[in-house]
Image 1: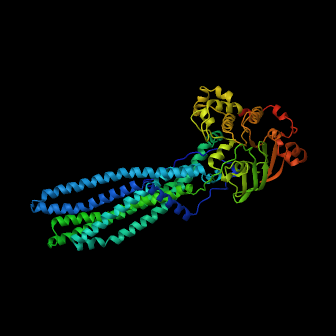
Image 2: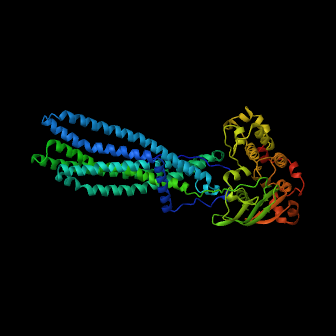
Image 3: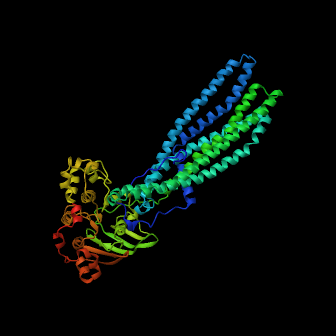
Length: 622
């Protein structure tokens, strides 16, 4: 059940090549509620400033329409008195009545059109800001919120928050008719005005309770909405696993588990809204009848005329329209609550950049100085100090959870260390411009996400000018992707959505993309895990001979990768346990040999593992 004027959740899966579990926080971190409220208000102010002229126009049109509505009873009443007396000026006043009514209608239409424009612009701004912050933060910060939650925050909730500037304008304008009507009642006859004012405190209490109860129910509704959206995206991402396991019914129950709570919160919102409307609907007629009774007495006493009685009744109706402010208040309350959800994305810390550039012709010397990275309240990397010579290939090895993926993320600045410094050719990575960093530091992942309309565009995807067809094919050849790409119906022009790709083929396209934009530092985070050993060996040879020379960091699980590396960095529990050539570590460290237990039958420095038949898993990656 949806709340009044609320939109449902919208979900999208996040990028699979973000930092791995070692680089993610223990759970979604929630910003303090006061901080979120302040951030939400700042975002709403920014949205209002973004369309300041149009928002002012909305306010001007609504105020002018309200003024026309306020003038209408007086003009109509005076015209009626003139016509009853057969005054010669009656026809002129009749035309004036028509003009006032036409002006009110035209101004309302203009306000409605401008409102749509401002709402759209404000929503677009909030979405752009949120998306820029989500894509500009470190992957582990983006992982604070589930993909479905982030999508809902940037779609449904941003759209609701985008309505706040115009809702405020309409709310301000909605106050003019009631206030002006009360003043007009005093001018027509003080006794009718006093009669109306007797019920005003009840209206104020009614609106105050409505605002308080609506804020609480909207916040609860949106929280449940986000949780349901997150579960839905998880189920969609794992649809094949669910189908294979035969757990569709269980997953459906899990996704919809909080649906009763969502329905209860939606009904509670409608109850608050309906209860306020019902009470105001009961109170308003009582006030109007009271004003009519007093006005009739005053008319019989000759204190007011028929036209003035008509005007008094119309003004009483306008004054009673203070209940119409309820709608504007509801929109503001819903929008502010939604803005808090969007502000949670805006509060993500940006991965800032400096203004420095790398020295020309640098060899790619990478240095880590006392690097410590904290995840989930404990150190995942601890005081790592390392100097990697330029142009060398370094294999990073260790057991699962040792910090290999996090080391790769820090080395390529997908995240910053909590302490210490990372330098490339003597320049701290924090001080580099975004262009210099992404031009010279490339990544390949174990589960790459492919972007672009065609296979060729997916390989060429990246910062800087798009590479030409020759460069794209050369990169595909180096990654072992060219043979299967040429077998596709349209080769490199085959639409990405129409290409039936296995896991190994997707991984080779990800490698080709990295090779196409290779700079002085290339980080391969388990980027050959889905390849058979023969293909992996060919990729390693191409990386050494056909790709731009530079420093390579290879997160390695295969023994062959460590064998062929110039240097091995052995991580254990977030610390560097040893650094050296593979043959030395293999000879003197029994625990190092245990890291490659699956390949333990292969002698160090040999290539017997490359001659073994590939496993079924490796065959699946072909």
